[in-house]
Length: 399
Image (tube, rainbow, N blue to C red; front, side, top):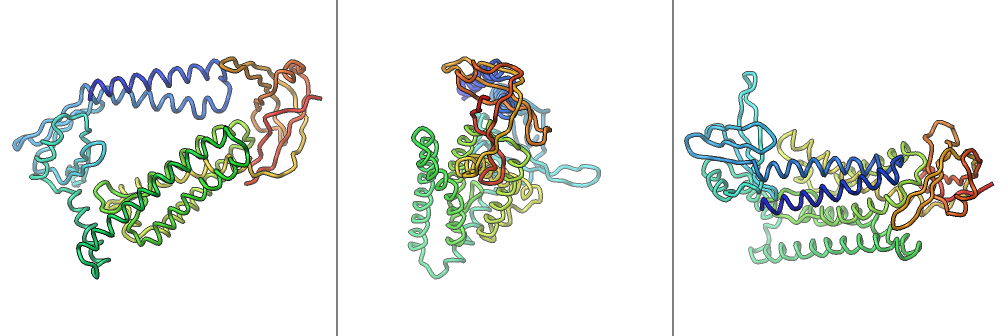
Protein backbone atom coordinates (compact mmCIF):
# COMPACT_ATOMS: atom_id res chain seq x y z
CA UNK A 1 0.00 0.00 0.00
CA UNK A 2 2.82 2.44 0.92
CA UNK A 3 4.66 1.87 -2.36
CA UNK A 4 1.38 2.27 -4.29
CA UNK A 5 0.65 5.60 -2.54
CA UNK A 6 4.21 6.81 -3.21
CA UNK A 7 4.03 5.93 -6.92
CA UNK A 8 0.59 7.56 -7.33
CA UNK A 9 1.71 10.68 -5.45
CA UNK A 10 4.86 11.00 -7.56
CA UNK A 11 2.92 10.53 -10.81
CA UNK A 12 0.37 13.17 -9.79
CA UNK A 13 3.07 15.57 -8.61
CA UNK A 14 5.17 15.22 -11.75
CA UNK A 15 2.11 15.38 -14.01
CA UNK A 16 0.61 18.51 -12.47
CA UNK A 17 4.02 20.19 -12.11
CA UNK A 18 4.71 19.58 -15.79
CA UNK A 19 1.21 20.82 -16.69
CA UNK A 20 1.56 24.00 -14.65
CA UNK A 21 5.07 24.74 -15.96
CA UNK A 22 3.83 24.16 -19.51
CA UNK A 23 0.94 26.62 -19.11
CA UNK A 24 3.20 29.04 -17.22
CA UNK A 25 5.63 29.30 -20.13
CA UNK A 26 3.09 29.10 -22.96
CA UNK A 27 0.06 30.89 -21.51
CA UNK A 28 1.24 32.70 -18.37
CA UNK A 29 -1.24 35.56 -18.57
CA UNK A 30 -4.27 33.46 -19.34
CA UNK A 31 -7.17 33.42 -16.85
CA UNK A 32 -7.33 29.64 -17.35
CA UNK A 33 -3.74 29.23 -16.08
CA UNK A 34 -4.26 31.08 -12.80
CA UNK A 35 -7.94 30.35 -12.08
CA UNK A 36 -7.95 26.58 -12.79
CA UNK A 37 -4.48 25.15 -13.57
CA UNK A 38 -2.63 26.82 -10.67
CA UNK A 39 -5.22 25.95 -7.95
CA UNK A 40 -5.29 22.34 -9.21
CA UNK A 41 -1.49 22.26 -9.13
CA UNK A 42 -1.40 23.50 -5.50
CA UNK A 43 -4.23 21.16 -4.47
CA UNK A 44 -2.71 17.98 -5.90
CA UNK A 45 0.83 18.76 -4.73
CA UNK A 46 -0.54 19.32 -1.21
CA UNK A 47 -2.59 16.11 -1.37
CA UNK A 48 0.46 14.18 -2.57
CA UNK A 49 2.62 15.47 0.30
CA UNK A 50 -0.09 14.74 2.90
CA UNK A 51 -0.70 11.26 1.45
CA UNK A 52 3.00 10.34 1.55
CA UNK A 53 3.38 11.59 5.13
CA UNK A 54 0.26 9.71 6.19
CA UNK A 55 1.28 6.48 4.44
CA UNK A 56 4.84 6.39 5.83
CA UNK A 57 4.66 8.14 9.22
CA UNK A 58 1.10 7.60 10.54
CA UNK A 59 0.45 5.05 13.26
CA UNK A 60 -2.38 4.00 15.55
CA UNK A 61 -2.07 1.94 18.74
CA UNK A 62 -4.86 0.83 21.06
CA UNK A 63 -5.43 -1.28 24.17
CA UNK A 64 -7.89 -1.59 27.03
CA UNK A 65 -5.75 0.41 29.47
CA UNK A 66 -4.40 3.39 27.51
CA UNK A 67 -7.15 3.65 24.89
CA UNK A 68 -6.16 4.98 21.44
CA UNK A 69 -3.02 6.85 20.39
CA UNK A 70 -3.02 8.22 16.84
CA UNK A 71 -0.54 10.16 14.73
CA UNK A 72 -1.79 11.00 11.24
CA UNK A 73 1.60 12.11 9.91
CA UNK A 74 0.45 15.72 9.50
CA UNK A 75 -0.92 16.74 12.92
CA UNK A 76 -0.02 16.31 16.57
CA UNK A 77 -0.42 13.00 18.41
CA UNK A 78 -3.95 12.33 19.69
CA UNK A 79 -4.45 10.26 22.86
CA UNK A 80 -7.97 9.16 23.80
CA UNK A 81 -8.76 7.12 26.94
CA UNK A 82 -11.24 4.25 26.59
CA UNK A 83 -13.85 6.02 28.73
CA UNK A 84 -13.92 9.02 26.35
CA UNK A 85 -14.57 7.05 23.14
CA UNK A 86 -18.17 7.64 22.05
CA UNK A 87 -18.77 6.05 18.64
CA UNK A 88 -17.19 5.11 15.31
CA UNK A 89 -18.21 4.99 11.66
CA UNK A 90 -16.57 2.94 8.90
CA UNK A 91 -16.45 4.53 5.44
CA UNK A 92 -14.46 4.16 2.21
CA UNK A 93 -11.36 6.03 3.43
CA UNK A 94 -11.08 4.46 6.89
CA UNK A 95 -12.73 4.73 10.31
CA UNK A 96 -14.03 7.95 11.83
CA UNK A 97 -13.85 7.85 15.65
CA UNK A 98 -15.82 10.29 17.83
CA UNK A 99 -14.77 11.01 21.41
CA UNK A 100 -15.80 13.28 24.27
CA UNK A 101 -13.45 16.06 25.32
CA UNK A 102 -13.79 18.65 28.10
CA UNK A 103 -13.24 22.16 26.69
CA UNK A 104 -13.66 25.14 29.07
CA UNK A 105 -15.77 23.09 31.51
CA UNK A 106 -18.01 21.97 28.65
CA UNK A 107 -18.02 18.46 27.22
CA UNK A 108 -17.85 18.45 23.43
CA UNK A 109 -17.70 15.67 20.87
CA UNK A 110 -14.63 15.65 18.61
CA UNK A 111 -13.64 13.20 15.91
CA UNK A 112 -10.61 11.99 13.97
CA UNK A 113 -10.05 9.56 11.11
CA UNK A 114 -7.87 6.46 11.00
CA UNK A 115 -7.16 5.99 7.29
CA UNK A 116 -6.91 2.79 5.30
CA UNK A 117 -3.12 3.10 5.39
CA UNK A 118 -3.22 1.68 8.92
CA UNK A 119 -2.37 -2.03 8.59
CA UNK A 120 -4.38 -3.37 11.54
CA UNK A 121 -7.63 -1.68 10.58
CA UNK A 122 -9.66 -4.86 11.02
CA UNK A 123 -8.26 -5.36 14.54
CA UNK A 124 -9.08 -1.75 15.37
CA UNK A 125 -12.64 -2.24 14.10
CA UNK A 126 -13.13 -5.32 16.28
CA UNK A 127 -11.69 -3.51 19.31
CA UNK A 128 -13.91 -0.45 18.75
CA UNK A 129 -16.97 -2.65 18.25
CA UNK A 130 -16.61 -3.83 21.85
CA UNK A 131 -15.90 -0.38 23.34
CA UNK A 132 -18.04 2.13 21.41
CA UNK A 133 -21.28 2.59 19.49
CA UNK A 134 -21.14 1.21 15.96
CA UNK A 135 -22.88 3.90 13.89
CA UNK A 136 -22.83 1.70 10.78
CA UNK A 137 -24.95 -0.92 12.51
CA UNK A 138 -27.25 1.72 13.96
CA UNK A 139 -27.76 3.45 10.61
CA UNK A 140 -28.30 0.15 8.81
CA UNK A 141 -30.81 -0.97 11.45
CA UNK A 142 -32.60 2.37 11.12
CA UNK A 143 -32.74 1.96 7.33
CA UNK A 144 -34.13 -1.56 7.68
CA UNK A 145 -36.77 -0.37 10.16
CA UNK A 146 -37.75 2.44 7.81
CA UNK A 147 -37.91 0.07 4.83
CA UNK A 148 -39.92 -2.56 6.72
CA UNK A 149 -42.34 0.05 8.01
CA UNK A 150 -43.00 1.45 4.53
CA UNK A 151 -43.50 -2.07 3.10
CA UNK A 152 -45.22 -3.80 5.99
CA UNK A 153 -47.72 -5.46 3.63
CA UNK A 154 -44.94 -7.40 1.84
CA UNK A 155 -43.39 -10.70 2.87
CA UNK A 156 -39.63 -10.98 3.46
CA UNK A 157 -39.11 -12.62 0.07
CA UNK A 158 -41.04 -9.83 -1.65
CA UNK A 159 -38.98 -7.22 0.21
CA UNK A 160 -35.73 -8.87 -0.92
CA UNK A 161 -36.93 -8.98 -4.52
CA UNK A 162 -37.92 -5.30 -4.33
CA UNK A 163 -34.47 -4.37 -3.02
CA UNK A 164 -32.75 -6.34 -5.79
CA UNK A 165 -34.89 -4.62 -8.45
CA UNK A 166 -34.14 -1.23 -6.90
CA UNK A 167 -30.38 -1.85 -6.92
CA UNK A 168 -30.53 -3.11 -10.51
CA UNK A 169 -32.47 0.00 -11.59
CA UNK A 170 -29.94 2.25 -9.81
CA UNK A 171 -27.06 0.44 -11.54
CA UNK A 172 -28.70 0.95 -14.95
CA UNK A 173 -29.12 4.66 -14.18
CA UNK A 174 -25.46 4.84 -13.12
CA UNK A 175 -24.10 3.37 -16.33
CA UNK A 176 -26.56 5.38 -18.41
CA UNK A 177 -25.07 8.51 -16.81
CA UNK A 178 -21.57 7.29 -17.69
CA UNK A 179 -22.59 6.72 -21.33
CA UNK A 180 -24.24 10.16 -21.56
CA UNK A 181 -21.11 11.77 -20.13
CA UNK A 182 -18.94 9.96 -22.67
CA UNK A 183 -21.23 11.03 -25.54
CA UNK A 184 -21.00 14.67 -24.49
CA UNK A 185 -17.23 14.55 -24.29
CA UNK A 186 -16.91 12.80 -27.67
CA UNK A 187 -19.45 15.17 -29.32
CA UNK A 188 -16.89 17.99 -29.35
CA UNK A 189 -14.88 15.96 -31.86
CA UNK A 190 -17.87 15.22 -34.12
CA UNK A 191 -20.11 18.19 -35.04
CA UNK A 192 -22.07 21.06 -33.51
CA UNK A 193 -25.52 19.48 -33.95
CA UNK A 194 -24.51 16.35 -32.07
CA UNK A 195 -22.88 18.58 -29.46
CA UNK A 196 -26.16 20.45 -28.89
CA UNK A 197 -28.16 17.23 -28.48
CA UNK A 198 -25.55 15.72 -26.13
CA UNK A 199 -25.44 18.90 -24.04
CA UNK A 200 -29.24 18.93 -23.65
CA UNK A 201 -29.32 15.25 -22.65
CA UNK A 202 -26.44 15.67 -20.20
CA UNK A 203 -28.09 18.75 -18.72
CA UNK A 204 -31.54 17.18 -18.38
CA UNK A 205 -30.39 13.80 -17.03
CA UNK A 206 -29.55 15.07 -13.47
CA UNK A 207 -33.05 16.60 -13.30
CA UNK A 208 -34.49 13.23 -14.34
CA UNK A 209 -32.46 11.58 -11.54
CA UNK A 210 -34.08 13.87 -8.96
CA UNK A 211 -37.54 13.06 -10.32
CA UNK A 212 -36.74 9.35 -10.03
CA UNK A 213 -35.67 9.93 -6.41
CA UNK A 214 -39.01 11.62 -5.79
CA UNK A 215 -41.23 9.01 -7.46
CA UNK A 216 -39.44 6.05 -5.83
CA UNK A 217 -40.46 7.48 -2.44
CA UNK A 218 -36.95 7.49 -0.99
CA UNK A 219 -36.01 3.94 -2.01
CA UNK A 220 -33.34 5.47 -4.26
CA UNK A 221 -31.45 8.43 -2.86
CA UNK A 222 -28.89 11.03 -3.86
CA UNK A 223 -26.45 11.63 -1.03
CA UNK A 224 -26.40 8.60 1.28
CA UNK A 225 -24.25 7.26 4.09
CA UNK A 226 -21.94 4.32 3.40
CA UNK A 227 -23.98 2.14 5.75
CA UNK A 228 -27.35 3.07 4.25
CA UNK A 229 -29.60 0.37 2.86
CA UNK A 230 -30.68 2.38 -0.18
CA UNK A 231 -28.78 2.78 -3.48
CA UNK A 232 -27.41 6.20 -4.43
CA UNK A 233 -27.64 8.25 -7.63
CA UNK A 234 -24.70 10.47 -6.73
CA UNK A 235 -22.37 8.70 -9.20
CA UNK A 236 -24.41 9.31 -12.39
CA UNK A 237 -24.95 12.93 -11.30
CA UNK A 238 -21.19 13.39 -10.92
CA UNK A 239 -20.54 11.66 -14.25
CA UNK A 240 -22.72 14.22 -16.04
CA UNK A 241 -21.42 17.17 -14.00
CA UNK A 242 -17.80 16.19 -14.70
CA UNK A 243 -18.46 15.90 -18.43
CA UNK A 244 -20.19 19.29 -18.41
CA UNK A 245 -17.31 20.82 -16.47
CA UNK A 246 -14.77 19.47 -18.96
CA UNK A 247 -16.82 20.83 -21.85
CA UNK A 248 -16.94 24.27 -20.20
CA UNK A 249 -13.13 24.49 -20.26
CA UNK A 250 -13.26 24.53 -24.08
CA UNK A 251 -15.30 27.76 -23.99
CA UNK A 252 -13.72 29.21 -20.84
CA UNK A 253 -11.52 31.80 -22.59
CA UNK A 254 -14.51 33.15 -24.56
CA UNK A 255 -16.37 34.38 -21.46
CA UNK A 256 -16.42 38.17 -21.37
CA UNK A 257 -18.15 38.78 -18.03
CA UNK A 258 -16.99 36.32 -15.37
CA UNK A 259 -19.08 38.06 -12.71
CA UNK A 260 -22.28 37.39 -14.69
CA UNK A 261 -21.17 33.84 -15.41
CA UNK A 262 -20.60 33.25 -11.68
CA UNK A 263 -24.05 34.66 -10.86
CA UNK A 264 -25.78 32.46 -13.45
CA UNK A 265 -23.90 29.36 -12.24
CA UNK A 266 -24.77 30.12 -8.61
CA UNK A 267 -28.43 30.70 -9.49
CA UNK A 268 -28.62 27.34 -11.30
CA UNK A 269 -26.89 25.66 -8.32
CA UNK A 270 -29.44 27.10 -5.87
CA UNK A 271 -32.39 26.11 -8.10
CA UNK A 272 -31.02 22.58 -8.47
CA UNK A 273 -30.44 22.31 -4.71
CA UNK A 274 -34.03 23.40 -3.98
CA UNK A 275 -35.34 20.97 -6.59
CA UNK A 276 -33.29 18.17 -5.02
CA UNK A 277 -34.58 19.09 -1.56
CA UNK A 278 -38.19 18.96 -2.76
CA UNK A 279 -37.63 15.59 -4.46
CA UNK A 280 -35.71 14.00 -1.56
CA UNK A 281 -37.46 11.86 1.04
CA UNK A 282 -38.09 13.15 4.57
CA UNK A 283 -35.31 11.01 6.06
CA UNK A 284 -32.80 12.22 3.46
CA UNK A 285 -33.72 15.86 4.13
CA UNK A 286 -32.52 15.49 7.73
CA UNK A 287 -28.93 15.37 6.43
CA UNK A 288 -27.47 14.02 9.65
CA UNK A 289 -28.15 14.29 13.34
CA UNK A 290 -25.47 16.89 14.21
CA UNK A 291 -25.58 20.50 13.04
CA UNK A 292 -21.97 20.23 11.82
CA UNK A 293 -22.78 17.17 9.68
CA UNK A 294 -25.86 18.91 8.25
CA UNK A 295 -23.83 21.98 7.32
CA UNK A 296 -21.13 19.79 5.74
CA UNK A 297 -23.74 17.85 3.76
CA UNK A 298 -25.46 21.02 2.52
CA UNK A 299 -22.15 22.62 1.52
CA UNK A 300 -21.09 19.42 -0.30
CA UNK A 301 -24.35 19.17 -2.22
CA UNK A 302 -24.27 22.88 -3.10
CA UNK A 303 -20.72 22.39 -4.40
CA UNK A 304 -21.89 19.51 -6.60
CA UNK A 305 -24.76 21.67 -7.85
CA UNK A 306 -22.36 24.53 -8.64
CA UNK A 307 -20.17 22.19 -10.69
CA UNK A 308 -23.28 21.22 -12.63
CA UNK A 309 -24.45 24.84 -12.96
CA UNK A 310 -21.11 26.13 -14.20
CA UNK A 311 -20.47 23.14 -16.43
CA UNK A 312 -23.87 23.42 -18.12
CA UNK A 313 -24.25 27.20 -18.35
CA UNK A 314 -20.89 27.99 -19.97
CA UNK A 315 -21.29 25.84 -23.13
CA UNK A 316 -25.09 26.33 -23.28
CA UNK A 317 -24.68 30.12 -23.18
CA UNK A 318 -22.47 29.98 -26.28
CA UNK A 319 -23.74 26.97 -28.26
CA UNK A 320 -27.43 27.95 -28.16
CA UNK A 321 -26.86 31.68 -28.66
CA UNK A 322 -28.50 33.04 -31.83
CA UNK A 323 -27.96 36.74 -31.15
CA UNK A 324 -26.42 39.04 -33.73
CA UNK A 325 -22.91 40.10 -32.71
CA UNK A 326 -22.02 43.67 -31.85
CA UNK A 327 -18.79 44.82 -33.49
CA UNK A 328 -16.31 46.71 -31.28
CA UNK A 329 -13.12 48.41 -32.40
CA UNK A 330 -10.25 47.66 -30.00
CA UNK A 331 -6.52 48.28 -29.78
CA UNK A 332 -3.94 45.52 -30.11
CA UNK A 333 -1.80 45.76 -26.96
CA UNK A 334 0.40 42.68 -27.34
CA UNK A 335 1.04 39.62 -29.52
CA UNK A 336 2.03 36.12 -28.45
CA UNK A 337 2.83 32.79 -30.10
CA UNK A 338 2.30 29.52 -28.22
CA UNK A 339 4.30 26.58 -29.57
CA UNK A 340 3.57 22.95 -28.71
CA UNK A 341 2.05 20.19 -30.80
CA UNK A 342 0.26 23.02 -32.57
CA UNK A 343 1.31 26.64 -33.01
CA UNK A 344 -1.32 29.05 -31.68
CA UNK A 345 -1.40 32.81 -32.25
CA UNK A 346 -2.88 35.29 -29.77
CA UNK A 347 -3.64 38.99 -29.74
CA UNK A 348 -4.11 40.83 -26.46
CA UNK A 349 -6.61 43.60 -27.01
CA UNK A 350 -7.89 46.52 -24.93
CA UNK A 351 -11.18 46.37 -22.96
CA UNK A 352 -14.40 47.31 -24.70
CA UNK A 353 -18.04 48.13 -23.79
CA UNK A 354 -17.39 49.89 -20.46
CA UNK A 355 -13.61 50.15 -20.62
CA UNK A 356 -13.35 48.66 -17.12
CA UNK A 357 -13.13 44.96 -17.94
CA UNK A 358 -9.71 43.33 -17.99
CA UNK A 359 -7.84 43.06 -21.26
CA UNK A 360 -8.72 40.00 -23.32
CA UNK A 361 -6.53 37.59 -25.23
CA UNK A 362 -8.03 36.29 -28.46
CA UNK A 363 -6.88 33.40 -30.61
CA UNK A 364 -6.37 34.26 -34.28
CA UNK A 365 -5.08 32.61 -37.43
CA UNK A 366 -1.49 32.93 -38.61
CA UNK A 367 -2.47 35.19 -41.53
CA UNK A 368 -4.31 37.74 -39.34
CA UNK A 369 -1.48 37.55 -36.79
CA UNK A 370 1.13 38.40 -39.43
CA UNK A 371 -0.95 41.31 -40.78
CA UNK A 372 -1.52 42.95 -37.39
CA UNK A 373 0.97 44.91 -35.30
CA UNK A 374 0.87 46.26 -31.75
CA UNK A 375 -1.03 49.57 -31.80
CA UNK A 376 -3.33 48.60 -34.68
CA UNK A 377 -7.09 48.60 -34.31
CA UNK A 378 -9.17 45.48 -34.96
CA UNK A 379 -12.87 44.61 -34.78
CA UNK A 380 -14.11 42.09 -32.20
CA UNK A 381 -17.47 40.25 -32.27
CA UNK A 382 -19.32 40.33 -28.95
CA UNK A 383 -22.50 38.25 -28.46
CA UNK A 384 -25.26 38.68 -25.85
CA UNK A 385 -25.27 35.02 -24.84
CA UNK A 386 -28.17 32.55 -24.61
CA UNK A 387 -28.25 32.95 -20.82
CA UNK A 388 -27.36 36.63 -20.84
CA UNK A 389 -23.63 36.22 -20.26
CA UNK A 390 -21.66 38.22 -22.88
CA UNK A 391 -19.05 36.25 -24.81
CA UNK A 392 -16.76 37.01 -27.68
CA UNK A 393 -15.83 35.00 -30.74
CA UNK A 394 -12.35 33.52 -30.87
CA UNK A 395 -11.74 35.37 -34.11
CA UNK A 396 -11.30 38.99 -35.06
CA UNK A 397 -11.92 41.13 -38.13
CA UNK A 398 -8.82 42.97 -39.29
CA UNK A 399 -9.49 46.53 -40.40
